[in-house]
Length: 513
Image (tube, rainbow, N blue to C red; front, side):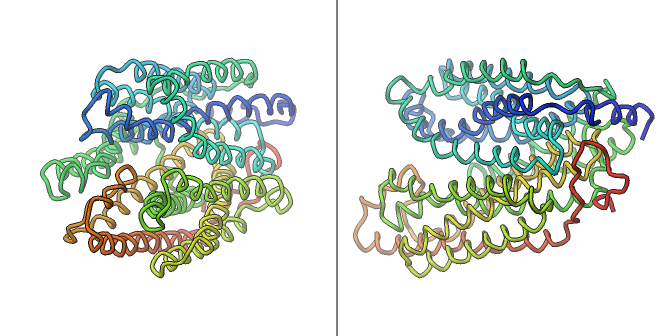
């Protein structure tokens, strides 16, 4: 480590004299929760308005790109925000992220065609890519690891609550005003967040380098985006063996190889490879990717399962999915306020959480395959949320606790990137499983938006479709069980690094071995 970097660690707000008071911490976290609410609620609120958007703009065959463009842009930019915040400070970067998000919101609300909306949603996603990582990084700067559980639990709670109220809010705004206002409503909320963060976040950041690795950033973005496009388009827009998919895979590999060669020679790379020498970071990234791969891959079909297999209405299916998020909120808050402060250890709660999630997935798989009722399904959904709510906050704390200050930003953002990447792989994989199960059965292709298609077929076909879709959803739950079990196995190799009670560095960090 160079002398300049060492001075940065010493000069950063880590010493006891420079500790922020509780009032400052509360004000910053409140502003960050508003910022997180912007990004968290956007996906669900937009999904609700998609039918109205199609009726106004047309282009139903490319409608999914309204969501996909946002997800791809936000996921691919996460590591960049982390590294740039290490170089230039957290406050300028979160300003940039919010302003880009709001710019994309204004443009999306003014879109006059579906192509314009897709492009503007990508711009919005570029801003959204910095919201979650930077919020976690700023909390990591202000609060020592041993005291960080409550703050990180609040982040999980914000995401869970927003995922529940988003569809309701989207429907209300679309009905009372128009779909344009689901984007415009971000403006006053974003303005409040900017003002609150500007007033509350006053901690100085001593940047250690002003050098920007433009080539590394370009190669990383090209490789990541190409791989994400393969996940988004493969098997749906283009066959897996099509020249387009093969070309994207080749581009992702070539750009990735060049990126690795480049960062080995670059003195200040956009993604330092020595991050992957840290055992805690590597294991945490694998566990987070697997956990969210299983969760998003299976939970994607909860509404379909409730509406088609269990026979409830679309409105009621939303309430039946609610226990998942309620479980996440409860476990996140209990972990942050009780378990972590009392034990000072992050690993036991995660082991218990993934064990509980594995059992819950297994019960869901059995319940779906054997036609069990809500008395079995709903407690399993709730238990799944309880288990997974113990993983994300603790894992972020584990990584921030094990990394040096100069890598905290890029490490936290890259962990969020692997989490999102795992979720995308899970969604793609579960969709492929469902498609394979129903292929060749001459059944109407069902999605959450057209579950009523079965009403137009014969009773015999309806009965056959019910059996096929029940088995298909049970298979996705089985896949989720296996994936989360793998995450649990990997988790046992995670080092238990003692949590720091201050912002100083460990003299000896076992997580690096």
